[in-house]
Image (cartoon, rainbow, N blue to C red; front, side, top):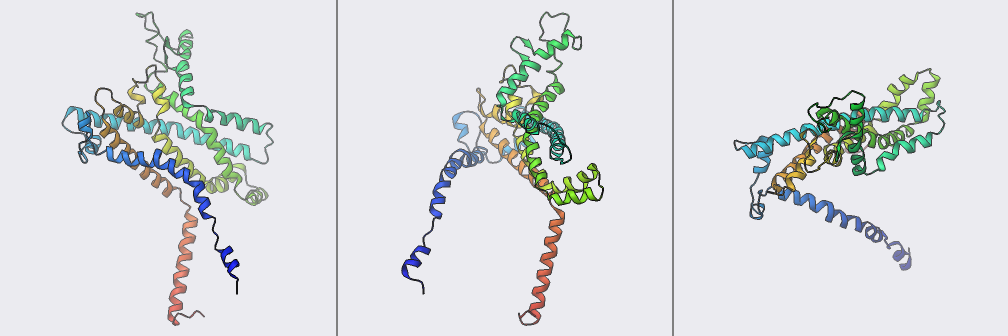
Length: 353
């Protein structure tokens, strides 16, 4: 029999120290993330306008106005602007995610290929990851000076194209304000897509490389012995086994893309006058929330909640489409065998034979 001292030693628990270490995270999370999220839901049911209206409960009127509009011209504009911003958000996200994933996956496979002896791999990895650590504001200002409308006229690249004769200038104007090649609708969207791709492809490449390096090397060795080509190895081994990390990349990129704010907002000479072709849902929410004339916090809160549920639904769809079907089939088979064994044991009075 154990002595009292031994029982006392065994009863000592150090879990409380672990809870104390993680307590600051939960405090910060509750104050700066969880409570603002809850407060957003509350604001979405409040009115718009003056301080009195902000304290008025309006139910689902804000959601109805954003999703369905109405006969009132102001409410109709709220609906139309939200749909336009949602379309812009999807266009900008898809336009940067597709080239980003193609470029990142190609580079990840290239850098992890054992047969390729590429000198300076580490240097190239660092250089490709560097744009990810640059602040979005700095990148937006840089490309604004190059491609957008700077304070003294169009960007440097527009002026260069004008000198080369690629971009024409209005003959009736002595200023360069009429040069709109890279500040047009699809041109400016293309620049924003390029910025997003350039900033994030290095991070995506590193994640995909970690996924490839986690694949059992014996699979690649067996494929090499069987005489499989590089394309066959990629299609039959690398790409299928990357499905979990690809699902993670898709979901995280989708969440970031739907919340895209800084680059579209700052890619203008006057950030308070964002062009309609770059106005994302996040910019839409910001403008309504900070409307100087008449703050529309109810609409901003409702739009935030709608964006939250859109992200949730799309994330669930992405996880469903990228699920491991073989693992699901194996799990069903194991469950079926367990149920069958349970039924057989009941036939013998609960005794297994």
